Length: 231
Image 1 (spheres, rainbow, N blue to C red):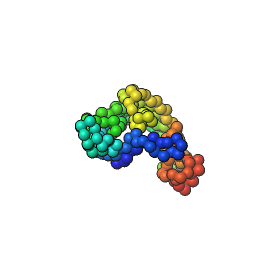
Image 2 (cartoon, rainbow, N blue to C red):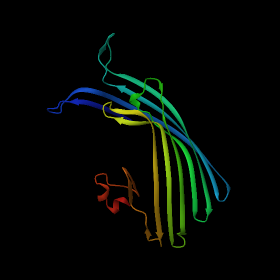
Image 3 (spheres, rainbow, N blue to C red):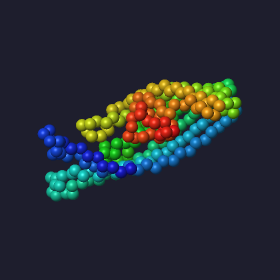
């Protein structure tokens, strides 16, 4: 990904920029790979494990450097490069004690990429580590082959980030704010009856997160989306 981030001070009278706070070009590259395996020692038990490897490269060009410093003239830009990699393991356990009932427990680690503008040249880029625990259950009643199926799902998710990032307007970038935690409770129901009705909502919203079946019209709010677009 490439981009340019700029911030200026504006005159109060006519909103004309009069001072540059920052002006930077940013390049971020991510190369990742993963592997997973599954063991099923008995029919009602599945053990899954996986590992993801991420490598990141960050490049920043500061376009607002002075044309001279205490040593004399200099170019008015300065570049910095930083690199880093992260390992993210995940393991899950699925138990099916009854026909149609599945119980799931999983643990995983993830990483949050660094803010490129805060890195120094040739620095090993640090990553915030996110640890997540999920407990869930799924119950299926009936089957599509029989003409009707009802599926109920529920899950609790706990996530902890060791050093979170929050956007700071005065600095114009994300800043570290220390550890943070998140809790989520998810529930869903889906019904399929006779092949002609699938009782899954076309869109669902929780806070500022919207999940849709297919597409949306970016020019319209969710409440005004048409069924033809959402399908």
